[in-house]
Length: 359
Length: 178
Image (tube, rainbow over all chains, first blue to last red; front, top):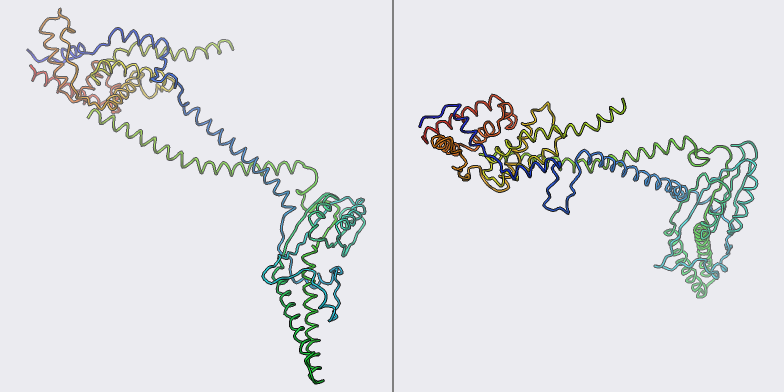
C-alpha cells in the first residue's frame, strides 16, 4: 500500500467523519424549530436565576430603596428626638455656688425653725434621716421659653400664675414688659413642688408656643445625709452636756457647761437650717419661665413649615440616604468582591481543567 | 414610516433567529462530528451537541460579530460543552474509541479504499488528543485555520503550524501502519 498523499489523506479523513443518526438529527431539527425548549431534569424546577442584566439593576434599585426607607425612618426618628430633646435636654447640673442666693429666695419653710435652742430639740425633722438607709435627694430645675404675640403677654402671664398656684408653687420673682415684638415679654422665677414639676411644666407648656424647654437635675443626697448625721451627733452632744449640767456641783462648773451647751445649740441650729435648706432644694424645683415676643432665635424650632424647612429636611434626608448608601456599599462591596474573586477562581479552575482534560 | 419602524423592530429578533437557524443548518452535522471525535461516544456526542446548540441559542443575542465568525463562536461553545462532559465523566480523551465500523465504508469503493481508511483511522487513534482535535476541526468540522485558531484561543499561524505537525504525524503513522 502506498503512503496516501495529502489530498488522498484529506479525503480519507473526511470519509471517516462521524455522522449523526437520522433519528437524532430529526429530533434536533424539531427542537431547533421549537426554539430549543429547555430540557430540564427537574421540570418542576424550570425557573432559573435571572441574568446579570436584570440582577444588577434590581440590586441597585433594592439598595436605593433600602437607603430611602432607612433615611425616612431615621429622619422621622430624628424629628421626634429633636422634638423630645426640647423636653428632655439636660443642661449641666446647677452650680452649687448659687446656693446662698437660692437660700435667700427660698420660701418660708413649713416648719419655720427658730434658732432657739430648746424648741429645736423637740421638733422632728421634716425628713427623717436614718444612717444606712438614705432616700435619694435630687434637686431639679427647669427653664421654659414660650413664644407669644405682644398682645398675648398679659394673658399668658396670668395663666402662668394660675398654673403655678394650681400646682402649689410659688412665684419668687416676676416681671412683664409691654411694647413692640421683641421688646414685650415676661419673666417668672418659680418654685414648684418637685413631685408636681412634670404636671406644672405640662401646664406651663400649654399656655403658648414652646420655643425651648430644658430640665436639669443635681443629686444632693451626699450633703443631705452628711448634714443629717452631723445633726444627730450634735443632738447626742447636747444630751451629754445636759447630763453634765445636771451633775454640776459648783457654779463655775455649771457656767462652763452652759457656755458649751449654748455653743453646741447654735451649731445644731445652723446644721438644722442647712438640712432644711437642702430638703427644700429637693422638695421644690426652681423653674424659670420666659415669655418672648418676636422671631424665635432658633427659626427651625417653631413657626410654620416653609420652603427653607423643606430644603433643610430634603438635605437632611439626602445626607442620611447617602450615609446609608455608603454603609450598604461598605457591606455589599466586600461581599461582591469575594463573590467576584470566587467566580474568577472558579472560571480559571474550569479553564485549567478543560485544558487538562485533553492533555 | 412609523409602521415601517415597528415592523422592523418586530422583525429584528426574527432576523436573529433566522441567522441562528442558518448557522444551525450549516453546522449541525459538523458540530456533531467534532464533538463525537472528542468524546468518542455517539450517545454522549448527541447529548452534548444538543446541549451546545441549546446553549448557543440562549446566548445568540450576546454574539459579537467583531470577535469572530459565528461558526468559530458555535464551535467554541461546543468545545467547552464537550470538555465539560469529559471532565464530568472523569474520562480522558485517550479512552478506547468506538471501533471503526467496516460496514460503514461503501463496498463500491473497493477493499483497497476500505483498508486504507482503516489504516488512517488507526493512525488517527495513535495521535495525541490535541492533535486529533485539530484534525477533527479541520476535516470533520470543515473549519478554516482562522476559525480553528479562534476556537482554540491561539493565533492563526500557530494553528496552521500545529495542524501541519499533526498531519505530518498522521502521515507517518499511516506509513507505519502500512
